[in-house]
Length: 269
Image (cartoon, rainbow, N blue to C red; front, side, top):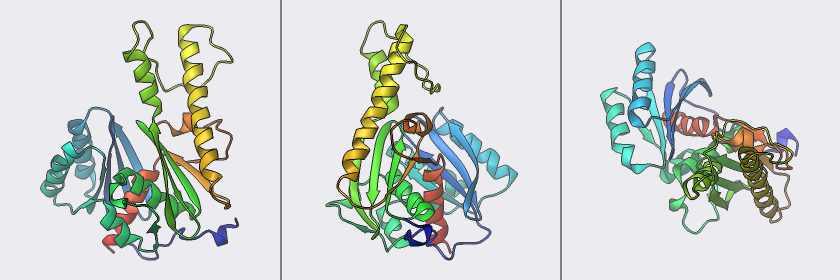
């Protein structure tokens, strides 16, 4: 579909100019931080050490150059109060993304979904980022602790999606439920042609098997529609897992941060 025909991309015609937004994306295993200014993510940090490590990084950034607001996405409710308190202590408006705020910022997006209030905040941020950057129709995938996918058709309707085990869960399950298999480093993306050691056999099985799962999921989803979807991937394991699935995919590591910050900026404009 020609770019001019893709709907909703760049549909925010006015945002709070000059506003510098701190973006916090709390996941199950790590926290991603971002700085947003003038319509783009300008810096990021990745924290595996929980709230304290992430909060320390935030304070360091705030000391260098103050922010004007905190955009917040979380799938871990237990830390929500701590982050809200940090925003208050820093004098920052606290914008916690939820369905109400998504609809306020993107009223043109409808939901063909029985109970949209159950959609995860991270999935809302992913969809917002994908719609605004790439337009519709779009299939956005997030490769984190869980694998998620959401489908938004060309008419701006959220049609549904998929939730499946993520790549790290596959790795951890093999390690935790067996006596002798090691815990692999997930950083390497190279796939051996055949496993010639325990580690190589595991890497082959996980990478090839996981890509096969994703390929089948995408194939089955796209069978339901007769539109030329743009496929976008984000999340900590997107670059490794999206390669080789058999479909052209745009990997956008900061998509969740961008989506949350864009909705926040629109609400403050």
